[in-house]
Length: 262
Image (cartoon, rainbow, N blue to C red; front, top):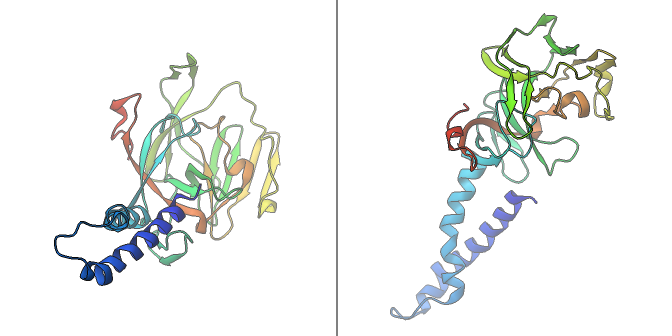
């Protein structure tokens, strides 16, 4: 469901009703006459919808985490806030960038329209920017020939499955975050697809090596062995970017999660 399009259509309809009432029908009504239903339940919603549309399109948009691909950084059920102008100002609905601002950096957690099906929103961490040579071999991440620093910390406990997974602290640029890597999972990447610029990636029994093309990014989940990401379906085009995740504003199952991510 394209919620942005639905909101835009509601804005047009209520805006037309508000304009008609404000400049035509209101002048014809008696001062003590009650508002007709189409004004009360149509035009009166226009200012609210306008504010929501503006905030959601240009300032911040809420998202809910649907899967465990970003554990332990983001958990299933986290409601996150996404900054819509960090990577430039885009026209709503068509997602056309009209003002250039910043570019995604390694370590950023971003929401983007999935290249395979742009009607779906995905959230992953940027590990490679245009021009980077990204290698994920034997479960170790290397960028431009330099291994990304990692250090072992305490194991992560999945409270639902009662299962422990090795947890590491990884440093991408200036961003320090945690990742999960299953010791007994095979490094071979199965079920890859035929994606644009696939010739930039080379697969073997140890993993994959990719050269990130211009205007694209290489994204991975922090739950490395339980994430369908750029290793499988390819690069994220710049035009698919929605925004940068920066805040957990709610989680029904754990109120302590609020504000725990930035």
